[in-house]
Length: 296
Ligand SMILES: C[S@@+](CC[C@H](N)C(=O)[O-])C[C@H]1O[C@@H](n2cnc3c(N)ncnc32)[C@H](O)[C@@H]1O
Image (cartoon, rainbow, N blue to C red; front, side, top):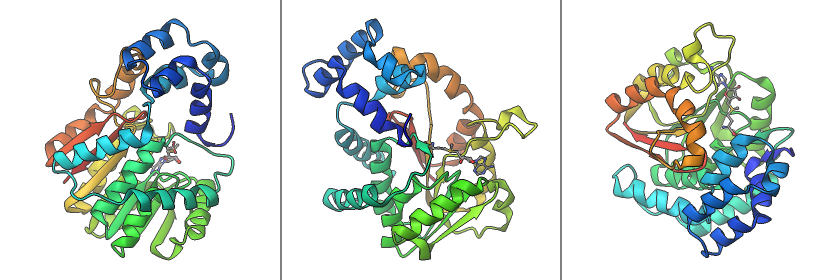
């Protein structure tokens, strides 16, 4: 598999898969697409190999990522989680620049195009003064929020314990012109919470709990509960929490994705119990990897 966005690989494979072409062209409905994907994944199996890529991601890929992100943002506005309508033309100019400059190194990312676009819109609507990205990896998700941080003359803190990815995040943020307003910290986020000021108005959550931690509840996306329990008091009233890989069984699921979803969602039970009782409102949106947005 090449480095860079996994969506490039999945979309290239889907582009040669007749049922997806028909879905894109509006000739068949998603149900028909799923029937055909299930009955005959054809060349997708050879090109994508991994069952998660085929059954989970491909079955949740929309016919049009831009349209899907517009619908998601409109829904979040209707929910009262965000307000305003950021400029699509400005987003497209930013996307062009980012795609020309960004260095993925040897890394692969599962940030899908609608997850990037929704985050850009959220940041432009919120214009955070202080954003914290937990599990920033090499910055490829957080970068989409930086135009909003810059528009609010805000600052960002990116956190990840892996020095190889934080070095690449730092390099890319500088290349994109956000070096001055960004601090990249190589650490486990939970070691930093106590020393943080209580002025955070946007949190991005995408860490993966390491198996070196003796508590199995912390492993994988189970870490989200620990992160929220640690940072919640440092978030101002009205802060936004944006969560990658947020799954709830009935959202964006379909019978093919369901095989994977139940297992993934169960790891988030403690996180969901926390956010449901502490945040004013929230929604899990049906992007391929599930995007949760919560308002404190
Ligand atoms: C693999 S990334 C998420 C990738 C992202 N979903 C994507 O596709 O681009 C998860 C990151 O969480 C980081 N991480 C693990 N434990 C952490 C912790 N305690 N605090 C902050 N980040 C952590 C890992 O080093 C890793 O870079």
